[in-house]
Length: 262
Image 1 (cartoon, one colour):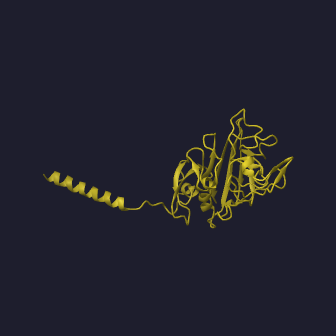
Image 2 (cartoon, one colour; image 1 turned 180 degrees about the horizontal axis):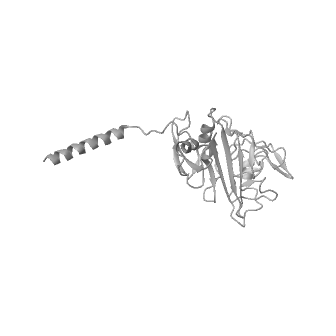
Image 3 (cartoon, rainbow, N blue to C red; image 1 turned 30 degrees about the vertical axis):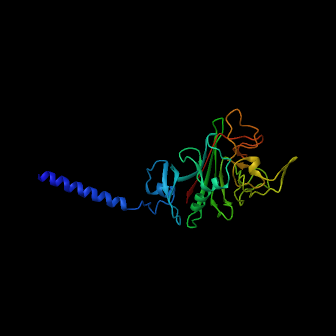
């Protein structure tokens, strides 16, 4: 009988603890503001999806963290095939789309919420893969995005890498730094029109595909139509980084864009 009474008492205690736990709100550590902080707090943390909450953001959100020896990187773009279309309108690019563990776009609003923190500075890394087994990268210091009112204007600082500085352009006059984001339904590029030989372009998103920080129209554009090996050369719409793969338009096999705080 005593054992039965003891068991009932233990059961009541456990039920009470469970009920209290259910009343507690889900909390995200104030230190987990981004993937860099997670890596710093847990050096052995593995790559994967984590919940982060940048300062000033009321609702935490999920992001894929690429944990590297040089820190934790918050991935905001990944492309490796044609399953996820990047030909989308402004609302989709603002909010994000795709699967965080596969091809996806995190969302302009989320990236802007990370980089608007004036206490931190951010490094942008762009990783590129071609169809022949080659890879290259470009890194930019002092990366940030402007507000939505400013069309999430792109700001990048000093470049380093082996892919070339395609954002500033493979030739003068097409610097994309300082331009707002454009989509097929919202034009913020610098063409009115742009003249390419005997072709006049008013809207870079329609010609190059997807959404991007176009200027006139530029030599970096990673959101066009994905093309498989054997059908990846000569397309105006594709995944382009012309300072690495130039001349005849070359559509890349895979890309990844990510940021870390420094």
